[in-house]
Image (cartoon, rainbow, N blue to C red; front, side, top):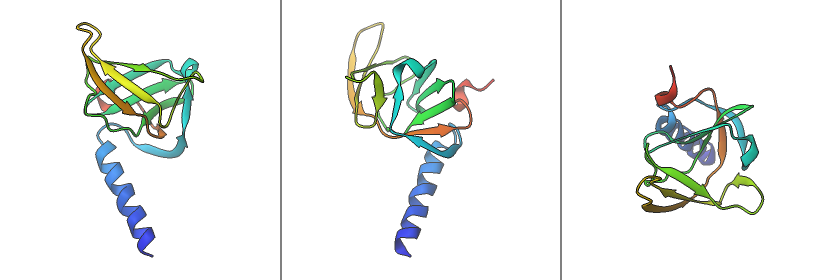
Length: 118
């Protein structure tokens, strides 16, 4: 019974953090192939989103280095972005490196982050 309440509380906290960005669905993945990614969006408020032919996916990573004018460098040996892979955040103009964060689980969301919606 306590585990059920803890799971519900964790779900509600996760939904409230990501509610401004997009609504999560029940589908999750541990990896997304780099060749599947058609577009990316990275921001401190919304997090890390990618668009594939299957729709939009949000990574559950919380990284304080994310920002609107920053880029990611991913290092992977299997041509996929997977949970636990390290991503480095940098400014593509000044070449300043802001550090790295490990990726979390990918969760399917119903649309792009709020900042990208028309």
